[in-house]
Image 1 (cartoon, one colour):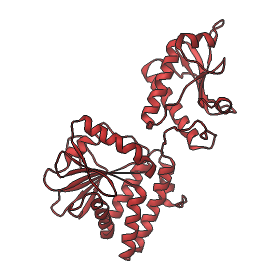
Image 2 (cartoon, rainbow, N blue to C red):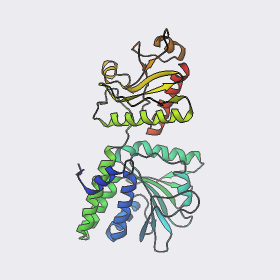
Image 3 (cartoon, rainbow, N blue to C red):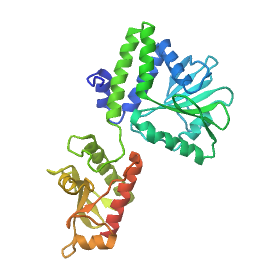
Image 4 (cartoon, rainbow, N blue to C red):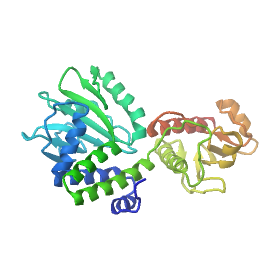
Length: 339
């Protein structure tokens, strides 16, 4: 595992949710100073699409053509034509314009590639989503035989590819080592540490009920994030309020009080219920008006759980973070409607 005690990791920790931006700038910096690293990029590109013109320079998040696309990195050939567009991601979801508007940005003449660089364990989820989005736009995708996830788009020279951070950085490290660029190889090692840090923080879809949702787990941090984001969105949509109510962790997990309709609830992680029944770690405890029973609220809203005083918020499996959050938000809205 890469060393997490490095300058880039330290800087990234100081700028919450900016890991991808720091990694993008670092990658652009290395490409700018090292011809060997650009040759490594060419090698990775050609392992999916042979014959793409060499990249002579790389620009970082500066090429907005007025169409709303701003690639993380733009690889230019000697004629100053974009041949490789790179989107560097860890946790972030695809934007509404990805991949289609970025594919349309690629030149019509000659071979070109839109490359997504992501954690290894995210490729299996992201690749089908990229293809589905292109398919819904009516694009024809033709598979390219080779070691990469790569397709040709609309019988043109445009291609869509996804590679892992480790694959790209390994190739760059080997190429710079051969070229005797020891300082660049050290920079790549720094970026490798940052990429490992970003991968460790990447949301992985729920798959097994026995996963660790303990207080020090990445899952617990994911849930803290979704609790806060769902609360803020509920407030913005007008069916929740947190005025005068605070974050209040309990012995069994992180959580906060909020107002759903006219009822105060505690939304949070209940590790005890999770261990007892394995259904979900996320629960709502309502404090309804006198004379109203939580079990009656279940009957009205069809929200059933194993406890007579808690309402479960179930976690949708095998989806990216945004869809996971949206599903949690919809469940909270249903609870608010019932209350």
